[in-house]
Structures are given as C-alpha cells and as structure tokens.
Image 1 (spheres, one colour):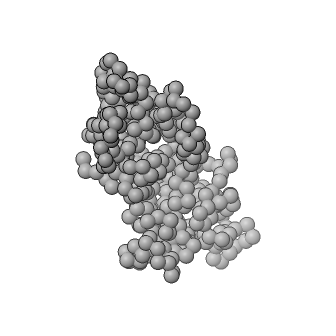
Image 2 (spheres, one colour):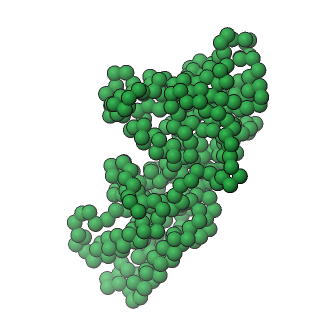
Image 3 (cartoon, helix red, strand yellow):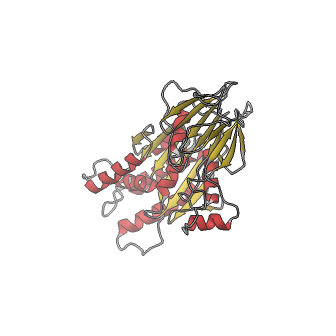
Length: 362
C-alpha cells in the first residue's frame, strides 16, 4: 500500500495565510510551505479532512471499489484489496480511537502535534510495529518550526511528513533491527518552569512501556497541599497507561531496566537523601557525609550501567545568589557536583531554557 502525501499542513496549511506568528514567519522564510492536509492512497482513495474517503470516479455507495473503509472516532481504518492496512487521522487535532478488533497497520498517518502519546499507545497495543511506516501529518503553528518538528520525529522514530512524499508500507525491517537508534541515557537540566519535565515526557511519548519514577518528597515530610496539587497536575498530564512509581530507590529502578524509565527528578531525590542521611541537622549528623556519598555512588554506578532507555530530569543550580544558610549552600554544591557526574555518564545532555532545547556537547 502507498500513500501520497499531497498536503501535510493544518487546515489552512503552514504558514497560515495572514498569520504573523513566529512559527508561520519561520515557515514562510524557509521556502515553500505545506498545503492543507490531503492524502491519496494507491492512486485511488482520496482523504480530505471533513469529507468521507472518495475515489475518482466514485464506484459505489460503499466507498472506493476493493477498499474497506471503516470510520473510527477521530480517523479512518482502511484495508486495501491486497490486505494492506492504513490508519489515518481524520484531520488536524483528531486522534483515532480503535477498538479491540483492530489489527496492526502497514501505514499510520497521525497528527502527532495533537497527541504524541497516541504513538506509544498504538505501539503498546501492537497496532504499530517496526514494519509500520509512520508519518506526521497536519503540521502547523502548534510547533515552533519545521526543524523542531523534525527533531521530535527523530526522537519518536517516525517521518516528518512532507508535501509530495510517498509513504509505502509495510517497510522492510532488517533482522537485527532494534527500533530507532538513539541515546539510552539522557539527562535534562533546567531551571524552574523551563520545560524540562515536558521535554522528558515528550521524548518518551512514543514508547510502548514507560515507568514514571517520582523521586520525592521524602518519607515523613509534613503534608503539603501545594505539593500535592503539583503532583496531581503532573499525573493528569501523563498518558494513563504509564506506570507511576513513587520511590527513592532510583538505583534499583535503573538496574531493573524494564521498559523506558523517566526519573523526575534528581533534585528532589537528592534533597530526600540528604534528609535521611542527616545532612540537614545543625550540625550535620555524624557520618552524614559518608552516608550521602554512598548513596550518590550507588546512583552513579547504576546510571553508568543502565541498559534500558532512561531520561532523568534535574535542576540547574548556581546561577543565582549564594544561599545565606549552610543547608542551602550544601544542597547547591551537592546537586551541582552530581549533575556534572551524571552528565559525564550520559549519552545525551540537554539544557532547557524558556522551553527551548539546547544540546550540550559531549
């Protein structure tokens, strides 16, 4: 089965006519833009948002001859005469919802700006496999630039759809193919509200099995309604099929290596470990430094030997005033040193600045 991507932009294309937002200005400066989304399947079935699939000439009330066209909420499930299968979003902002009767697809054309996590769910259900050709459709000013869209698609292991592209499926998969190649230890560092947690979640959206490890606050901490509200908001924004674990045993989670692991975050883990080690006492408890050092070494060793896909979020420190109290200075110093060691053992280190991603050199 083949799908010719006649247009890959949003409902008004990209850039949108008359729109002067930064994204559309970048798209206009880059050259020919993207036409409004439209797909031609096998030269026979035409998909246009807001319309039922059609052929030219139309050969019957059931749809194009030889094709089984099944509408699903948010999309189309299409089977060709040769058994080839295609899943398509029905338009910008729409996410196909499939029942248990669905089988795996050879091609998937999805609006991944609407929901990148739909890809992870399709993979988890076995509906999108290594052999499935996946392309991102309906690009528009929901993303900052074509370069950012391409970056995300590389992370997800899909093609950023382009006008005129021919997508063929199933695609050949070498026997030794293990999926999209990429860094399996990624450290994301940034200040408060820099977008680091969002980037971590985005990077793992296409994974079929993800454990979200919430490493803090420490046991015994007094109830904090504001913290609870933050946790609830984070949890509500994550895919519902992700597994959430609240634990300070980050090293143990790294050693288990089952599926993808998101650690959020190193700063709260360190604060909790410093508390349990007795570092916050004035003066610090006897052997507190030794207990803390042992925990840090255990974490570094597990991170160094991690075999699964893992993304860790940590806080940037040291860019403001020197804390006026000993505990603050101790935490700043310890986290700064820990960040350096984790970055040195990472395949990829990213810095988040105002929602923008900066890759740090190795």
